[in-house]
Amino acid sequence: MNIRYILGASDGAPIAQVLSVLRSQPAWRPFDERAVAFVRRFSQKLLTSAGIRRHPELAALGHWFRGANLQTLISRYVLESPEQLKLGRGLAFHLAPSNVDSVFMYSWLLSLLSGNVNLVRVSQKSSAPLDFLVDALAQTLAEDVGAPVRARIVLLTYPHDEQLTRTISESCLIRVVWGGDATVRALRTIPLRPTAIEVCFPDRFSACAIRASAVLEADDASLRQMAAAFYNDAFWFAQQACSSPRLVAWIGDESTIDTAAERFWSALHVELARRQPENSEAMNMARVAASFEYAAAELARPAMSGEFRSAHPMRLRLEAVLDESAKALHCGNGLFLETRFPRLVELAPQLSDKEQTLAVYGFTREELVDLALVLPPRAVDRFAKFGEALSFAPVWDGQDLITTFSRNVLLPTS
Picture (cartoon, rainbow, N blue to C red):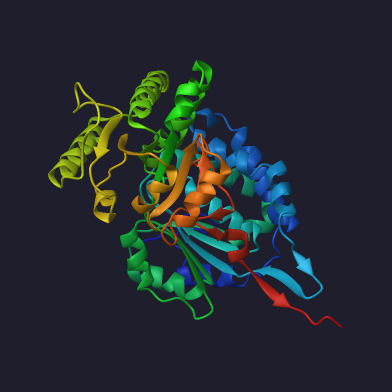
């Protein structure tokens, strides 16, 4: 089998032997001090590494797992009671996505903190962020704080190989799948142990909603902050992250929206000029091709005047309901669909179980609750402020990962 071990095993080691070692490790209690110490040190290592500023998504990862946040996380969970003992489930098999290098680290480290042993398959595509992560992990594992977890972590890569994936799946008690819908469907044909569970993070489609009057009420400094926050949500991963907004819903009357949209997009153009995100010819061609497909299907038309084919961002005005076919055409890469409604609750029919995050600007909590109560089943797992769409939380895609990754062992009370 063509396996390349990156961390935790020597190249050439039989996968059966590697799995045997992993499965022999006992489950720890959630937030075992050995796991917490390792994750805290890894965070420090990551944040103090030379070159971290070139990888803001990795800086965000390190910041999220810093010691202070770990203590906050620990305080949220009741770890024990007279009636039960919490333990990890055992061996967790993580299949990382190829398009967002750091996202799998959140589930991996939360699984470690939940008491589990972990085997992670990453994409064969090399990338600077992944190399940076591996280097920080290797350095942390080499320190004394890494000794207790060295036998509990294996990072590897291999070509798509159903038999190898089947072999690993037969040994694991948790399978965590980050990938597109096709990947999830394919992996679900590979059985798990009867006692195992599966957590899937498939294709998602996210949106934002803006109260037009709030944009007009914002002073210049607030508008710059809004544009910078939207940039962080949409452009860090070229709009490929599951929580990056692709639909922009304007809420208000037509005249107010016209004025607010011009002000907002102008501010964003200034932010783009300052930040200079990647905008390759391939990305531009993907936007143009998608726009032609939207036009051919009579789903959307250009929302701006002037030169369109080189526009970045590229804006399309929706002319039909945002159904599954419309969402499937979206390519990311700075393409935004725009729609308008007088009230926020009227956005609900456009959304489905495909939507993960709705970033919001200018709305009250009561308005968000009113929208949530009329949403289709499973639509929108989280509402986020502008600038926080990509911020991770232990509850992701509607699932509390610490709770999911651990189990309760009942004890007699007397």
